[in-house]
Image (cartoon, rainbow over all chains, first blue to last red; front, side):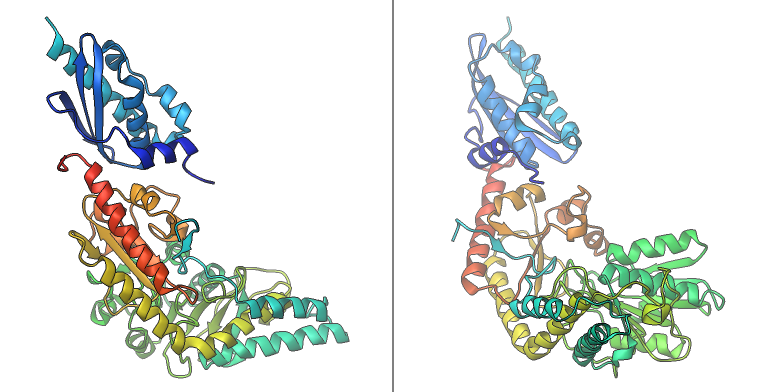
Length: 121
Length: 386
C-alpha cells in the first residue's frame, strides 16, 4: 500500500510556503518527532503571509504546506479556531499519524494567539 | 534516468535469474509427480531434487545429505533454534544470541524464553562486530546453542564465524548461523567452517522467494527436533511434500552463484565505493557498520534530517530505512540502536544495497539524489538559514 496520497506527494514536493515571514510572529514546537515552526504576518484582521519550517515526516510537511496555503488571507481568528480534521481527511493521513497532526494543530492555534496578541488593542 | 525507479534494495530481495525461471519451467514440464511417489515420474522428481541439492551442497562444500529443504530462512532459523534448543534441553537450557540478529532469530528466542530457556543477549562493538571474547564470556556450562548471523541484513557487518564457531566446538555448543545474506555472496566452506546449523534462502541471491534450506552438520549431538509434523519426508526433520520446482530453482541459483561469486564481489565493491565516495563529504554523515563489511550493503545516517521524509525525497531510488520486515513500523531500528545510535540517528538511516544489475550510472545518480535530498530537507528545517 502506498503510504502517501497524491496530495501529500504534491505538497511535500512543492512546499511553496516553506520559509519565514520577516517581521512576523512565529511559534516553534518540538515534540512527538515533529519539529515545526510557523510564522505569519497580519494585514488588518486577516492573515497576511504565512510560512512554515519543519523537520518531520512527509504527512506533517504536506499538512503544514496545505495549512499555510489555506489560511493566508483568512480572518486571523481562524488560526485560533483551526482544526486539522479536514486536513487529515483531504490528505488521507493515516490514523497512526494523528498525534503528529495534532501537534501541528496546536502550533497553528498558538500562532493565532500570537497574532491576536501582536495586533490587539 | 529520473523517469524510472532505481532498485537499490537487493538486501531485501533480488530479481530471479532468467536461467532459474527457465529451470523451474523445465522441471514443471518434466514431471508433476510427488517426489515421494515410487513410480517413474516420482523417481524422476526425486532425481531432480537430488541433483539440485547437490548443486547447493557444492556451493557450500557440504554433504548433500546434510541439507534439509525449507520454505526459506525464517523457517530454517525457527527449525534450527527451536529444534536445536529443544533437542538439547535435557543437557541444559541456556542459549546465547546477539542483539543485532534478524527478527526471525530474536523472536524464536523470545518464544523459547517463555518455555523456560534462559537467553543471554550479547552486544556488538560500535561497528557492529562481535568480539569473540565478549561472546565467550557469555557462555556457561549449561549453554547448548548459540546463534550469530553471518552478514547483517541492515548494516552488512560480517561476523568472525570461524572464531565464534571454534569457541562453540570446544565446548560442544550447537552453533547456528543465519546466513541468509551470505550464501551465494561470500565464500563459505562448510567442510572447514565450524558451524553446526546454517540457514539459507534463495531469494537473497537471485532465486525465487519461498525456498531455502537448513544445513545440519554431521557430528554427535547435532540434531534438531521438528517443528512441523505429518509425514516422513526429509528424515522427519521437515515433513511435507517437497517442491521439486522450487528446489530445482534453489539448485540452479546456487550453481550460478558458484560461477559468479568473485565477479559479483568485485562489482559490489566498486558500487559501494562509488556511492560512498559520492556522499562521504556530507556534513554529519555516519556510516552504520564496519568499513570492511559485506560490500553489497551501505547503511548511513545523517544528522538534522527526518528519515521518512528522506526516504520520500530520495525517490525514484528504491532503498530501505531498515530491514524490510520492520519498515512498516515507526520504531527506530533496534539493530542500529544496538550499535549505540540515538533514536534520531537510527531514524535517519538509509540502507543502500547493490546487486548484479546495479550500474555505475545508477549509483552516481543515487549519490547526487542523496546529497540533494539532505540539502533540501535541512533547508526546510527550523533554524536553517533563510
